[in-house]
Image (tube, rainbow, N blue to C red; front, side, top):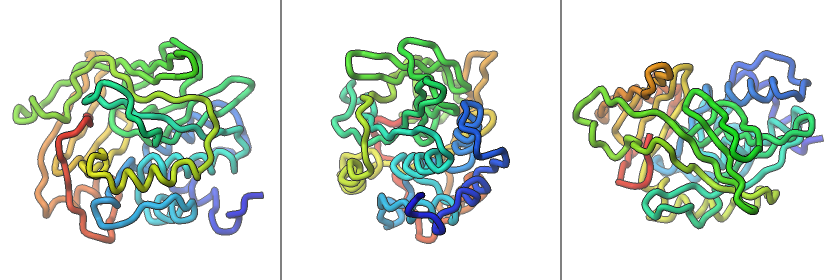
Length: 297
Protein backbone atom coordinates (compact mmCIF):
# COMPACT_ATOMS: atom_id res chain seq x y z
CA UNK A 1 0.00 0.00 0.00
CA UNK A 2 1.14 3.52 -0.70
CA UNK A 3 2.22 5.46 2.39
CA UNK A 4 0.22 8.38 0.98
CA UNK A 5 -3.10 6.50 0.94
CA UNK A 6 -5.86 8.73 2.26
CA UNK A 7 -3.89 11.89 1.53
CA UNK A 8 -3.65 11.71 -2.25
CA UNK A 9 -6.34 10.08 -4.34
CA UNK A 10 -6.02 8.79 -7.89
CA UNK A 11 -9.61 9.87 -8.50
CA UNK A 12 -8.62 13.50 -7.95
CA UNK A 13 -5.79 13.18 -10.47
CA UNK A 14 -8.09 11.49 -13.00
CA UNK A 15 -10.59 14.31 -12.61
CA UNK A 16 -7.80 16.86 -13.10
CA UNK A 17 -6.81 15.36 -16.46
CA UNK A 18 -10.29 14.28 -17.57
CA UNK A 19 -9.66 10.53 -17.50
CA UNK A 20 -12.83 8.46 -17.04
CA UNK A 21 -11.71 5.08 -18.36
CA UNK A 22 -11.05 1.97 -16.30
CA UNK A 23 -8.00 2.50 -14.11
CA UNK A 24 -7.24 -1.19 -13.56
CA UNK A 25 -6.05 -1.93 -17.12
CA UNK A 26 -2.27 -1.93 -17.25
CA UNK A 27 -2.10 -1.98 -21.04
CA UNK A 28 -0.48 0.27 -23.62
CA UNK A 29 -3.73 1.92 -24.67
CA UNK A 30 -4.38 3.07 -21.08
CA UNK A 31 -0.82 4.33 -20.64
CA UNK A 32 -1.03 6.26 -23.91
CA UNK A 33 -4.34 7.85 -22.98
CA UNK A 34 -3.32 8.93 -19.47
CA UNK A 35 0.00 10.26 -20.81
CA UNK A 36 -1.71 12.34 -23.49
CA UNK A 37 -4.40 13.67 -21.16
CA UNK A 38 -1.73 14.76 -18.69
CA UNK A 39 0.22 16.88 -21.19
CA UNK A 40 -3.05 18.42 -22.44
CA UNK A 41 -4.20 19.31 -18.93
CA UNK A 42 -1.25 20.10 -16.65
CA UNK A 43 1.18 22.77 -17.86
CA UNK A 44 4.94 22.50 -17.95
CA UNK A 45 5.89 25.61 -15.98
CA UNK A 46 8.54 27.01 -13.66
CA UNK A 47 6.60 30.09 -12.56
CA UNK A 48 7.15 29.38 -8.87
CA UNK A 49 10.80 30.39 -9.26
CA UNK A 50 9.69 33.79 -10.55
CA UNK A 51 6.98 34.23 -7.92
CA UNK A 52 9.25 33.91 -4.92
CA UNK A 53 8.11 30.33 -4.22
CA UNK A 54 10.38 27.36 -3.46
CA UNK A 55 9.88 24.12 -5.42
CA UNK A 56 10.25 20.97 -3.33
CA UNK A 57 10.47 17.25 -4.05
CA UNK A 58 7.73 16.50 -1.53
CA UNK A 59 5.11 14.42 -3.36
CA UNK A 60 2.21 15.60 -1.22
CA UNK A 61 3.14 19.24 -1.87
CA UNK A 62 3.40 18.51 -5.60
CA UNK A 63 0.02 16.74 -5.61
CA UNK A 64 -1.65 19.66 -3.87
CA UNK A 65 -0.06 22.13 -6.28
CA UNK A 66 -0.64 20.33 -9.60
CA UNK A 67 -3.89 18.52 -8.86
CA UNK A 68 -5.76 20.48 -6.22
CA UNK A 69 -4.51 24.00 -6.96
CA UNK A 70 -4.71 23.75 -10.78
CA UNK A 71 -1.07 24.65 -11.26
CA UNK A 72 1.57 23.13 -13.48
CA UNK A 73 5.16 22.27 -12.71
CA UNK A 74 8.52 21.49 -14.22
CA UNK A 75 9.68 17.94 -14.94
CA UNK A 76 10.73 17.17 -11.38
CA UNK A 77 7.15 17.84 -10.28
CA UNK A 78 5.11 16.61 -13.24
CA UNK A 79 7.03 13.42 -13.82
CA UNK A 80 7.45 12.63 -10.13
CA UNK A 81 3.67 12.88 -9.80
CA UNK A 82 3.16 10.84 -12.98
CA UNK A 83 5.42 8.07 -11.70
CA UNK A 84 3.33 7.84 -8.53
CA UNK A 85 0.17 7.67 -10.66
CA UNK A 86 1.57 4.87 -12.83
CA UNK A 87 2.64 2.77 -9.87
CA UNK A 88 -0.66 3.34 -8.07
CA UNK A 89 -2.42 2.11 -11.22
CA UNK A 90 -0.26 -1.00 -11.16
CA UNK A 91 2.19 -0.24 -13.97
CA UNK A 92 5.79 -1.46 -13.82
CA UNK A 93 7.42 1.99 -13.87
CA UNK A 94 11.07 2.77 -13.12
CA UNK A 95 12.35 6.32 -12.64
CA UNK A 96 15.35 7.38 -14.74
CA UNK A 97 17.37 10.59 -14.99
CA UNK A 98 18.46 12.35 -18.16
CA UNK A 99 20.56 15.31 -19.32
CA UNK A 100 19.06 17.95 -21.59
CA UNK A 101 20.86 19.05 -24.74
CA UNK A 102 22.40 22.52 -24.56
CA UNK A 103 22.70 24.14 -27.98
CA UNK A 104 25.15 26.77 -26.67
CA UNK A 105 27.79 24.20 -25.76
CA UNK A 106 26.49 21.82 -28.48
CA UNK A 107 26.44 18.97 -26.01
CA UNK A 108 24.35 17.52 -23.23
CA UNK A 109 24.44 19.42 -19.96
CA UNK A 110 26.42 18.03 -17.05
CA UNK A 111 23.46 17.90 -14.68
CA UNK A 112 21.24 14.82 -15.07
CA UNK A 113 18.26 16.70 -13.71
CA UNK A 114 15.45 15.70 -16.08
CA UNK A 115 13.22 12.98 -14.60
CA UNK A 116 11.58 10.38 -16.90
CA UNK A 117 10.19 6.86 -16.56
CA UNK A 118 10.70 3.47 -18.16
CA UNK A 119 7.47 1.46 -18.26
CA UNK A 120 7.32 -2.26 -19.04
CA UNK A 121 4.16 -3.60 -20.70
CA UNK A 122 3.90 -7.15 -22.02
CA UNK A 123 7.67 -7.46 -22.00
CA UNK A 124 8.24 -4.25 -24.01
CA UNK A 125 9.86 -1.13 -22.59
CA UNK A 126 8.54 2.41 -23.16
CA UNK A 127 9.76 5.86 -22.17
CA UNK A 128 7.12 8.08 -20.54
CA UNK A 129 7.77 11.79 -20.14
CA UNK A 130 4.93 14.23 -19.48
CA UNK A 131 7.00 17.32 -18.82
CA UNK A 132 9.50 18.64 -21.32
CA UNK A 133 7.15 21.16 -22.86
CA UNK A 134 6.79 23.09 -26.13
CA UNK A 135 7.62 21.25 -29.39
CA UNK A 136 9.91 18.74 -27.67
CA UNK A 137 7.02 17.26 -25.70
CA UNK A 138 6.01 13.71 -26.59
CA UNK A 139 2.25 13.21 -26.39
CA UNK A 140 2.48 9.45 -25.99
CA UNK A 141 5.17 7.10 -24.63
CA UNK A 142 7.97 6.04 -26.98
CA UNK A 143 8.95 2.42 -27.47
CA UNK A 144 12.48 1.89 -26.16
CA UNK A 145 13.96 0.65 -29.41
CA UNK A 146 17.01 2.09 -31.14
CA UNK A 147 16.71 3.95 -34.43
CA UNK A 148 12.99 3.46 -34.96
CA UNK A 149 11.08 6.46 -36.34
CA UNK A 150 8.12 7.13 -34.05
CA UNK A 151 5.91 9.83 -35.61
CA UNK A 152 3.80 12.02 -33.37
CA UNK A 153 2.07 15.35 -33.86
CA UNK A 154 5.20 17.38 -33.04
CA UNK A 155 7.39 15.46 -35.51
CA UNK A 156 9.27 12.21 -35.79
CA UNK A 157 10.93 11.12 -32.55
CA UNK A 158 13.76 8.60 -32.35
CA UNK A 159 15.58 6.91 -29.51
CA UNK A 160 19.15 6.06 -30.47
CA UNK A 161 21.26 3.65 -28.43
CA UNK A 162 24.96 4.54 -28.18
CA UNK A 163 26.74 2.17 -25.80
CA UNK A 164 25.13 2.65 -22.39
CA UNK A 165 23.64 5.97 -23.46
CA UNK A 166 20.25 6.49 -25.07
CA UNK A 167 19.59 9.73 -26.97
CA UNK A 168 16.17 11.20 -27.74
CA UNK A 169 16.05 13.23 -30.95
CA UNK A 170 13.31 14.74 -33.06
CA UNK A 171 12.93 15.74 -36.69
CA UNK A 172 10.34 18.45 -36.98
CA UNK A 173 9.05 20.90 -39.56
CA UNK A 174 9.99 24.40 -40.69
CA UNK A 175 8.64 27.29 -38.60
CA UNK A 176 6.27 29.73 -40.24
CA UNK A 177 6.18 32.88 -38.09
CA UNK A 178 3.06 34.94 -38.70
CA UNK A 179 4.26 38.09 -36.94
CA UNK A 180 7.19 39.69 -38.82
CA UNK A 181 8.63 41.29 -35.68
CA UNK A 182 9.33 37.79 -34.31
CA UNK A 183 10.89 36.39 -37.49
CA UNK A 184 14.38 36.55 -35.96
CA UNK A 185 13.36 35.78 -32.39
CA UNK A 186 15.74 33.53 -30.45
CA UNK A 187 12.68 31.58 -29.32
CA UNK A 188 12.11 30.22 -32.83
CA UNK A 189 13.68 26.82 -33.43
CA UNK A 190 15.36 26.62 -36.81
CA UNK A 191 16.93 23.16 -36.53
CA UNK A 192 14.96 20.54 -38.41
CA UNK A 193 16.56 17.72 -36.42
CA UNK A 194 17.60 18.26 -32.84
CA UNK A 195 18.72 16.24 -29.87
CA UNK A 196 16.54 16.66 -26.79
CA UNK A 197 18.19 14.68 -24.01
CA UNK A 198 20.25 11.60 -23.21
CA UNK A 199 19.83 9.01 -20.47
CA UNK A 200 20.89 5.63 -19.16
CA UNK A 201 18.69 2.87 -17.79
CA UNK A 202 20.09 3.18 -14.27
CA UNK A 203 17.15 3.34 -11.83
CA UNK A 204 16.90 6.48 -9.72
CA UNK A 205 15.21 7.30 -6.44
CA UNK A 206 13.76 10.71 -5.68
CA UNK A 207 16.74 11.56 -3.47
CA UNK A 208 18.87 11.71 -6.62
CA UNK A 209 16.99 14.82 -7.77
CA UNK A 210 16.83 16.88 -4.58
CA UNK A 211 20.17 18.65 -4.99
CA UNK A 212 19.50 19.08 -8.73
CA UNK A 213 16.22 20.81 -7.97
CA UNK A 214 17.94 23.17 -5.56
CA UNK A 215 20.74 23.99 -8.00
CA UNK A 216 18.34 24.67 -10.88
CA UNK A 217 16.46 27.17 -8.71
CA UNK A 218 19.58 29.00 -7.49
CA UNK A 219 22.14 28.83 -10.29
CA UNK A 220 22.27 32.14 -12.22
CA UNK A 221 23.26 30.14 -15.31
CA UNK A 222 20.25 27.80 -15.07
CA UNK A 223 17.67 27.90 -17.83
CA UNK A 224 14.96 28.12 -15.21
CA UNK A 225 16.33 31.20 -13.47
CA UNK A 226 16.81 32.89 -16.85
CA UNK A 227 13.38 32.22 -18.30
CA UNK A 228 9.86 32.13 -16.90
CA UNK A 229 8.05 29.39 -18.82
CA UNK A 230 4.48 28.14 -19.03
CA UNK A 231 3.63 25.66 -21.78
CA UNK A 232 0.59 23.49 -22.46
CA UNK A 233 -0.08 21.05 -25.27
CA UNK A 234 -3.28 21.47 -27.31
CA UNK A 235 -5.05 19.17 -29.78
CA UNK A 236 -3.46 21.11 -32.65
CA UNK A 237 -0.03 21.99 -31.19
CA UNK A 238 0.81 23.91 -28.04
CA UNK A 239 0.74 27.34 -26.43
CA UNK A 240 3.43 28.96 -24.35
CA UNK A 241 4.13 32.06 -22.31
CA UNK A 242 7.87 32.64 -22.13
CA UNK A 243 8.80 35.84 -20.41
CA UNK A 244 6.52 38.44 -21.96
CA UNK A 245 5.97 36.51 -25.21
CA UNK A 246 2.79 34.51 -25.71
CA UNK A 247 2.80 32.00 -28.57
CA UNK A 248 0.24 29.69 -30.11
CA UNK A 249 1.82 27.03 -32.29
CA UNK A 250 -0.23 24.98 -34.77
CA UNK A 251 1.18 21.81 -36.30
CA UNK A 252 0.46 21.69 -40.04
CA UNK A 253 1.57 18.17 -40.88
CA UNK A 254 0.19 18.18 -44.43
CA UNK A 255 1.95 21.44 -45.28
CA UNK A 256 5.20 20.50 -43.54
CA UNK A 257 5.26 23.60 -41.30
CA UNK A 258 4.61 24.70 -37.74
CA UNK A 259 2.69 27.97 -37.69
CA UNK A 260 3.82 30.30 -34.89
CA UNK A 261 1.51 33.12 -33.82
CA UNK A 262 3.58 35.19 -31.40
CA UNK A 263 2.89 38.43 -29.55
CA UNK A 264 4.13 40.29 -26.52
CA UNK A 265 1.78 40.81 -23.60
CA UNK A 266 1.62 43.69 -21.15
CA UNK A 267 1.95 43.40 -17.40
CA UNK A 268 -1.81 43.87 -17.07
CA UNK A 269 -2.42 40.93 -19.41
CA UNK A 270 -0.14 38.40 -17.71
CA UNK A 271 -2.64 37.12 -15.15
CA UNK A 272 -5.43 37.04 -17.74
CA UNK A 273 -3.36 35.03 -20.22
CA UNK A 274 -2.32 32.56 -17.53
CA UNK A 275 -5.91 32.07 -16.38
CA UNK A 276 -7.63 31.97 -19.78
CA UNK A 277 -5.00 30.02 -21.74
CA UNK A 278 -3.47 27.75 -19.07
CA UNK A 279 -6.08 27.75 -16.30
CA UNK A 280 -3.30 28.89 -13.95
CA UNK A 281 -3.99 31.31 -11.14
CA UNK A 282 -0.94 32.45 -9.19
CA UNK A 283 -1.01 33.32 -5.51
CA UNK A 284 2.06 35.55 -5.77
CA UNK A 285 3.00 38.13 -8.37
CA UNK A 286 4.95 36.83 -11.36
CA UNK A 287 8.07 38.65 -12.50
CA UNK A 288 8.48 37.51 -16.13
CA UNK A 289 12.03 36.81 -17.29
CA UNK A 290 13.36 36.03 -20.75
CA UNK A 291 17.14 36.26 -20.85
CA UNK A 292 18.81 34.79 -23.91
CA UNK A 293 19.52 31.10 -23.31
CA UNK A 294 19.43 27.81 -25.19
CA UNK A 295 15.63 27.53 -25.19
CA UNK A 296 13.31 27.54 -28.20
CA UNK A 297 9.66 26.84 -28.83
